[in-house]
Structure formats: structure tokens, C-alpha cells
Length: 222
Image 1 (cartoon, helix red, strand yellow):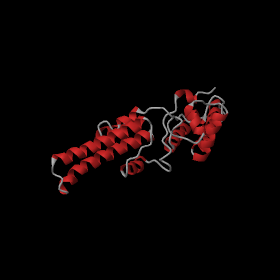
Image 2 (tube, rainbow, N blue to C red):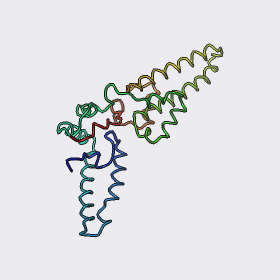
Image 3 (tube, helix red, strand yellow):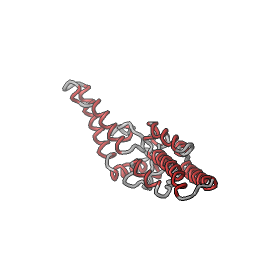
Image 4 (spheres, one colour):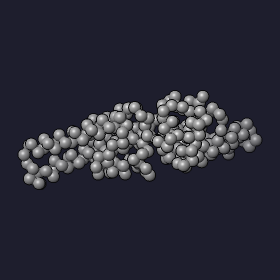
């Protein structure tokens, strides 16, 4: 691997790329640089062979969580990368850097169901598992609030005060979740948070692994 490039740069993916994105990028780039596309013995064929070898080496490491974690630690130890984000990765912590803010995750709760769905349709945020989780949690929270207004009258809660209290509770939950999301905290609402985890595909350790984009300076080689 060239000293100036990391495996992430070779595969053209961010440091927080999930496994499916790494796989997708690998197949796209490998198809472009496959040696069979060039005349045997030509300089293009030799270059493609070398590029494909680099791609295979990068993919074999980044596709395996254990090997990827060890590789991240090695990047820090060799001073290939720097910054709070990479220091946390070297310690086995893959969450957002301490003190960072996530406005996108917070805004998923701004208009409940509508903003939750909107963020799931924006590719940039749909690929961010932290934002995706909060978008789903916002959607389920809104659905639960609506169902509550339907179930209330069936239980004899007809007075406007009950409806008002229910809406106030919904607003309070939304504000708390919005604040925690803004500060990059892994806050899960009871039951609703569990549904959001499954819907956002956060496996196998969603409580700990909410990666975000690493700061641009953190991937620069020394």
C-alpha cells in the first residue's frame, strides 16, 4: 500500500463507512481496474494489476470488523492519522468525538414524522447510521403519539385536558430526544428505541457503534 494512502482512501470511502458501503465501493472500483479490460502486457494492464492487488488488500482488512479495528489502531500508532476521532477508534470507541454536535440528528425530531421520513430520503443522511436511527425513532414516536389520541377515547379519556397532557408528553419526549441527539448521545426511548434500532439495521452492537464522519484533518497523512 502506498505510504500516502490509507485503505479507506484506496476504496474511496469515509472512515465511518458501514460494511455494505465498503463492499459496494470495492466492486465498483474493482470493475474499473480489472486487468482483463486491458491488453495483456501493456502498461495499463500492469497498472490495473497493481491497483486490483491494492484494492483486494484493503477490502480483505476493512470487511472484517476485528481486522479493521486493529488496522485503525495501527494507523494511529504509526501516526498516519491524527485527531480526537482516531484516538477514540484506537481505544475501541467508535462513537462520535466528545464535544461534537449533530444538527442533522436533532432535526429529525423537529416536525416528527415528516422530518423523520425526509432525512431517510436524503442519501447523505440515510448512510449515517446515527442520523438514520434517530430518524426512525422520530417516526415511531410520532406514530405512537397519534395512536395515543385514538386509544384515549376508547379508555374514557374524552376531556380536552387528557389530550393536552398527552401532547405535552409527546413534546417533552421529542425535546429530550432532540437534545440528546444534538450532543451525539445514544439515547433510546423505551420500546420505540428498540424498534428504531431494528429498522435502521444497527447490528450487531448498536448501543456502542454509531459512527459519524471523521473530521477531514483526521485522515490526512503526516
